[in-house]
Image 1 (spheres, chains in turn orange, brown):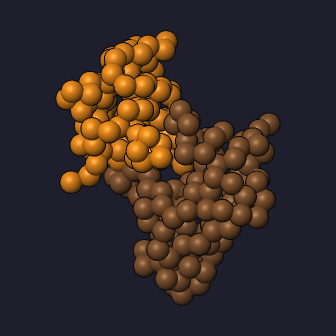
Image 2: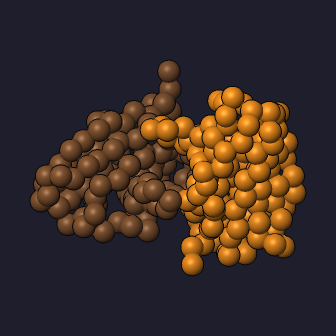
Length: 112
Length: 115
């Protein structure tokens, strides 16, 4: 079993819909949680960063962490065609020297 | 503009050949990383370096080698010992060693295909 599980998709939604992405993990030591966005044939870029449990909002993006369930989510409101990309969750712990463990990524397609 | 430059973008190699992927950064970051990306498997760490002249193996170092002679440069050599080298290779850097807040800055990647 992988340490971080993420549905590969693709997830296809109409423009303006809410995109809901999630990851589950098995290592309870993880305490830093990130979402990266990767456009086709490009390197990933950091979207959201959350420490421990809770919610964080940045514009149309909301990240949630539920450490008790070992479950993190990313919501994209009012989705745009430019949001079409692969979204990777990543997490780390001090015990692992803060090295990131990535999920496999979910491909999202927002149709105009 | 500051950033990470990887070259070449696309590379074809015959079986049994070594190939070196270049990674240069002008962000003045201390730490640099090499990841491999395969479909559905996320990013897997090959090697990382926290300071010049020092580097550590990641999770899948077998068949790869690196050097860190300059702060700006972290080339990756894919040797003939790597059993399945066809993949997308990503170089990254971070301000502090061990990723800090987790913000890795990535290059645009190099796609290696073994014929």
